[in-house]
Length: 289
Image 1 (tube, rainbow, N blue to C red):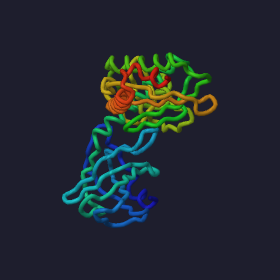
Image 2 (cartoon, rainbow, N blue to C red):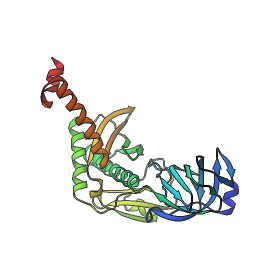
Image 3 (cartoon, helix red, strand yellow):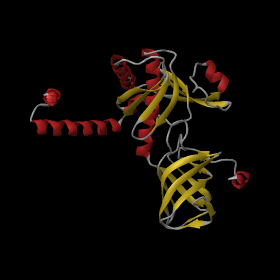
């Protein structure tokens, strides 16, 4: 990577605006060793001069997708940051991949949409927690994946079941109100002056990205987001618990992940209804007896 840094400064990320781009293969690694080419069936790590793939950072997992050329196809399963470079982890499905090749890098748009829904929902969740529980709440860690989100936050007390319901309802209200989200790139001092929330302990460069949901939330964030809260669809809190002294965790799902969650639970309820030969609402009493 040191050798690469002398040739190119970094991997340029074009994925905020473009789901695909032409790119040149700068480095090809097989089991950590630099190679000039690799055949079908090989697990590879690829570094490109530019990429639409988001590399795992800020709690958001890396994009999935494909790198394709005339007679080569690579399935990208993960993307991670290594110093200033984005490393694409994948498997060559067909053909031969060579250093210097020009390929088309294409993200899986369905996966990207799911992760965006969960990431913007995380911002709405933090805003709802501040409004309903305590304005002093701050983020203590997060995970934004394709199928769920996890949000850890500093909170001096337990949160009641009523508050959890109110948080869920408020987030869904903001989603239904179809707020347009705005992304601004500005100086760190200006962002803080405008009231943008920064993650405690995070190192920020002098120029930052700010995700603004007008009237709802404004946070420093380098992740990818929906352009309108309505794209999130629906938000469901799955669990709320304490994970350490003064730190609580909310796990939630958004968008199509909610449908999968409901289908699974519906199947369980149907099975129990059939087994006990009772209506769904009578299941708890039957189990007790």
